[in-house]
Image 1 (spheres, rainbow over the protein chains, first blue to last red):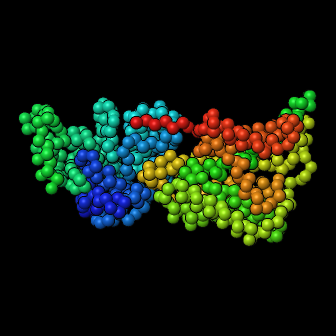
Image 2: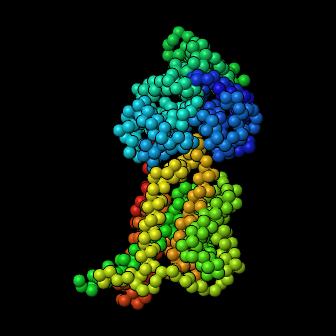
Image 3: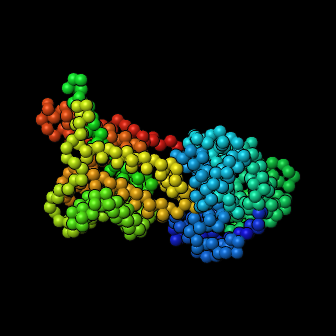
Length: 264
Length: 298
C-alpha cells in the first residue's frame, strides 16, 4: 500500500535528517517504526503526509508511493484525500473547539455529510467516554481522553492508512492498553493499515507485525516483530533486558562499544 | 418619565449605534488577527476605499443603493483575496513583525492610490435613508442609526451561523487554533487564509458604507479604524464575541462620557474616552474581557 523509497530530508537547507529511508506498509498491515529521540521517526511521518514545507524541511531525494501512485509532490490536503491520515504527537486537539467539532473537522475532506453524522456516532462506540463529553471544549479533557479524541478525529476521514506518532506518550499503562486494544479492532474491522511510531518498544513490538528500527536517520534493522524481540541488541537497547532475561544496571552496561557498531 | 432618565436612555441608544460601527470595524481586524496572527494596519484604508467605491457607484454610475452595497462587498472581497495572494502569501514563514510592516506599507500605498484615483475633496454621500428621525417614547433615533443597528445584528448572526455550523467556518476556527494540525486534517490552509482576508475585507466594506452615511467621505476616513483599537483590546484581541461586546461597550461609554462630562469640562471628552478606556484596560486587565490568560499544560 505505502512504499517509501530511499528518501532524504533536509531541514533549513543544511541539516540532513533522513539519510535514505526505505520502508513499506502492506495492505491493512500494522508496522512499527522504533528508535531513540532524534532518530527521524517523526520526520519520516511528516514527509509522508507532505507537511515538511511548512516546517522548513524539504524532501531532497527519493519517492513515496501510495497505492501505486507517487504522492511526494502533493499538497497535504490531497494526501489526506488519498487516504493517509496522521495523528500527530502530543495530543494536538483543537482546544477551542468542543469534542463534537473536533471530530467533525477530521471529516473536512469528505463530501457525504449525512454519512459523516452516522460515522461520528460509530466512532463514539469505540470510546464511549467521549460521547458523554461531546459538548465540552477539548482543552478540558484529560490527557487520555484527548488521545482518544485525536484518534477518533483521524478515523472519521476513513483513512486507508493511519499514521500514529507516539500515542502512548505520557499516558497511564491502563489507558495505553485500552487505546491499543481499540486500534486493534479498527485494524481488524476496517482493514485500516497502521504505521506506528513509538518509543515504548515493548508495546509497539507486541502490537505490530513488522518493525523497523531507526538510528540517526537510517534504518538499522528490520524484520517481523517476533524475530525482533528475540534480537540481542533490541533486547538490550530497547527492552532493557539481557540474554538471561534479567534487568541490567546502567552502571554495568558497556553501551558505548555496542552502539558504535550500530551507528557505523 | 423624568427628563434626566430619558437623556440617559437617549445617550445609550445612540451609543449602541456608534458601538455597532466600532464592533464591525473591530471584527474585521480580529478575523485576520485570530486566524493568521497578523494585525492588518491597512484595514482603515479598505474601509475608506469601500466608502469611495460605494459613493462613485451610486453617483457616477447611478447604481441603486442596495446593489451598490452588494457590489462594494464583492469588490472588497476580491481585494481581500488579491491582497492575500500577492502580498501576504510571499511573506509566509517570515517573522510576524515583517508581515505587519508590510501591511503598514500597503496602507500607505492604498491611501496614495485613493488620492490619485478619487481626489482629495470632501464628498457627501447621497444618503438613501430619510432624514427625519424616528421618535419612540421620547427617544429620538435617526433612521440611519436604526439601519446600522439592524444590519450589524444580521451580520453578527450570519457570522455566528457560519463559524458554528459550516464546514469552512469550522476549518477556519481549527486553523486559528493549530495551523499544522489543520494541514493534517486535509484543510487547505492557503484557501482558508484567502477566505479570511476576503471575509474581513467584506466586513470592512460594510463599515465603510455605513461610515459614508454618517460622515463626509475623504482620505481621512481611514483614521476612523484606529477608533476601533480600544474595542479590540477591551474584547481581548482574538475573540470575535469580544470585539462585538467591546465595540458596543466603547460606543456607549463614549457617548455617556460625551453627554455628561462635556457640559462640565467643555468639549472634547467624547473623543478621548475610548483611549482612556484602552489605557485602563491595558493597566488592569491586559488580556481584555474575553481574552485568555494563556493556560499551558505540560
